[in-house]
Length: 219
Image (tube, rainbow, N blue to C red; front, side, top):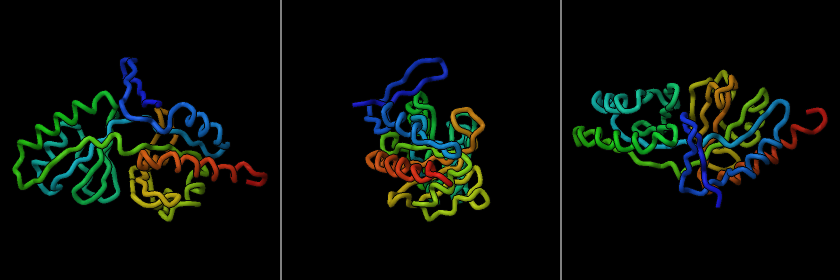
């Protein structure tokens, strides 16, 4: 089985124990299905930690910021980010932290210790959910038009600008979509789509099939 791999800033390859449903063969298939106006690829593998806590408790917010450098976004369907990490709003007391794979264990440990020191009334907790989701990136001038074929969310930049995220259905699958300012260091705003690991290959098939319409004459 193919395993997920990620390159660290030091140039070392980190291999993850879980099966990667978007390994090299699927990366090739996705990239080859792209058009002049839409590109699709597997998103880089990242550590994914789910945080729960009381956003109104300053001690909780301070603990998260001390460990991650980010404050939990208090506004629904938004995210906060720095050069290395992103913190996405999932619910009134729930967020997803995305971080480089080699930082996942350290962040999990640090947050666990920090939350244990808080008042029990805060109900703070952190769980490693890295294996539960896999993500695809879609970008280009017609990216929104492609996704509109299978998603009821309004993803037009006027309603869904950079820095927004939302949960909904795409191709009948539950997904989390985030509008990011760039992809892999390039200046390409993109829509990153998180789906359950067991379902992401189905989503990839749907994207490849939908992209075929954009390669027809007149498209």
